[in-house]
Structures are given as structure tokens and as C-alpha cells.
Length: 251
Image (tube, rainbow, N blue to C red; front, side, top):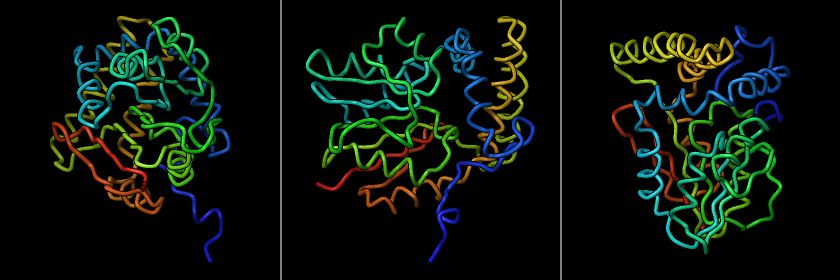
């Protein structure tokens, strides 16, 4: 029988450039995101050339989000996905944004997100079978254990409900991988520092790439979703780097 430690599936190994060990990881991440919250939307706009909201909207619609549904957006940050989901589900639906960073949630509220909650995806304060969809946009790399996370997602979903995880995946082609690294770890942090004047946001963008580079492969993510007894587990790839992982809870 495997020990509890053996059962842990981390999204990436300990990154000692930023924190000493797993025990100090959460505090370091929260500090970086809290310090960068006021700049985060502008960073995302720089990084995606203004296309980030459009892409997220299309991903939600591809996943089948529709009027009247209940959505849990985990790792919501400044609430980009939550706001898009609010528009899609309409007044008859319900969207709640969850994030460990209070500063991020404050920005989300100011942006128009109606319902926010400070917390972690690995320990959700919601009842069983409550949501039609659980989303996570580019935050999978910041959790402590994929297996625990996906079990929580499966728990709070209604029978027939769907998980939608958006992530950036390092390209298999070595040239494309180098180009993406130069862009995300070189260009974006420099532009962030020059135009926003924030050393904390610059460091967060460097960390952003390092988590992408060290992240477990897509096969691991898909495998853990399948272990959680989810159905129709699949990965849709857009432009070679954007991974849309989805899965459905059995009815």
C-alpha cells in the first residue's frame, strides 16, 4: 500500500529559487500574488496582446457553459473567467470566484465579480453536488496536490457536471519551447518592470515561466483526472501551447 506522501501528485517540483521547501511554498506564492494584484490585469493584457479575454470566453463556450448554470471558478485571480461566466449564465445563473489571494479578490470585486471567497481549491467550502461547472484558468501549477484538487472538484460538481482547466503547456518542439521561454521569462518580465515599475510583478512573471517549464506533462494531469472517476477526460490543444483539459462527473 502506498503512503500518503506517495499519493501526492505535485504539479511541479520544489523551485528553490523562490522558496526553500514545500512548507514555505504557499506563503511565498501568496506574497507574490498579493504584491502583484494591482498590476495583474495589465500584465495579462501585455502577455496575450489583448486576446486573453476572447480566448477564455471561447473556451467556456466550447466547454458548453450556458444560461442558468452554477459555476465555481477556482484560482480566479482578478476574476476574468468569473466575469465572462457571469455574462454567459445570466441573471438566472450563479458564479463564485475562489482564490487564496485577498488582494486579487479585491480587484475581482472592483471589476464586477459578484461572489468571491478566499480559499484553496484543495479544500472547498461548498456542499457536494452544487455546481454545473468548475473552472480553473492558468492556476493549476500553483496548487499543492493534483489528486486532492481533482477529488474536491469531483465532489462539488453535480452529476453530469464538467471540469474545465485552462493551462499553458511547454511545446514539444525545442525551438518553439526556447522562443516561448525567451518571451515569457525574458521579454514579459522586462516589459513588466519597465512599464509598471514593479519588481514583485517582474519576479512573478519569471516564476510563471518556471512553473510552466517544470510542470508535469499533460499525460499526468489526464491520468489523475481519470483516477478521480471522471468520464470523458480529454485535452484540447489550441495554438500548440494552450491546453484545455475537461472531464465530466458520472450521472
